[in-house]
Amino acid sequence: MLTYPDINPVAVDFGFFKIYWYGISYVAGIVVAWWLLHGRCKTLRPDWTREQVADLIFYGTLGILIGGRLGSVLFYNFSYYLHNPLEIIMVNKGGMSFHGGLAGFCIALWLFGRKQGKGFFTVADFVTPVGPVGLLFGRLANFINGELWGRPTDVPWGMVFPHVDDLPRHPSQLYEAVLEGIVMFLVLWWFSRKPQPAMAASGLFLAMYGLFRGLIEFFRQPDKQLGFLAGDWLTMGMLLSLPMIVLGLILLWLAYQKNSEKQKV
Image (tube, rainbow, N blue to C red):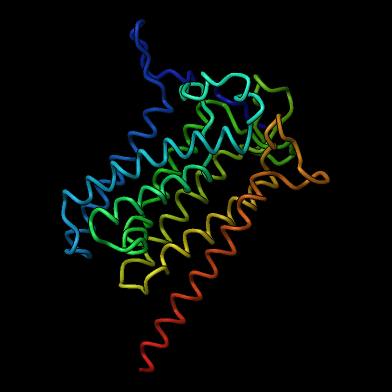
C-alpha cells in the first residue's frame, strides 16, 4: 500500500502572487505541443507555416480553457455555480472538464480553419497527434492536486489519500496519464507518421480517448455531487465518452471508405 505524497499545489509562492502546478501543467502542454507541431511542419507538413502553428495554438488554448471551464460548470456542478456565478472564473480552484474542453477546442479549430481557408479536418488531423501531451500534463496536475482519486481497492499499488479517508484507492489520475497521455501519444504519433485519409487521425483520437476514459471510470471515484447515474457503475464520464467512441468509429469508417472509393476510380 502506498501513501499519497501530499504535494503542495502551489509551485512558487511570492506572497502577493502564487504559481500553481495546475497552471504550469497547462503552460508545459502548450509549449511541448507547439514544439512538436513546429517539428511536423518541417518534416511532414510543409504546407503549414510557423505563424499558422502559433495562431493555431492560441486559438486552441482559448477553446480548451473556455470550453473546459464551461463544461465543468454545465456537466458536473451546475446547481452550485448557478448559486455562485462569480466562482465560474476562479479556475485556480480547479474544475475543468475534458469533454467541455474538447468541444471548445473543436469550435476554436473551426474558427481558425475558416480564417486560414483550411477545412476543419485538415486542421483537426494536423493537431490531433499532439493532443495527448496536454492530457498527460493535465492528469499529472490532477495527481499533484490530489483530486479525481480512484475507488477503494486492495491491489498492491493502492494509494491512501489522507485528505479523503484512510482507504487505499486506485491512483486513477496516473492510470489516465499513462493511457490518455503516453499510450495515445505513441499510437497517434506512429499512426500519423505517414499520410492518412482525412478524418482518420481525428476518428482514432476520439475512439481511443472514449475507450480509455470509459475503462478508467470503473476505477475512478465518481464526482461527489453527481455520484453514480445508474446502479453502482454508470458515471457521467462514461456517459460523455460513449458518443466519442461511436463518432470516432464512424469517422474512421468514413475516412477509409472514401479513400477506398477514390482508389477504385
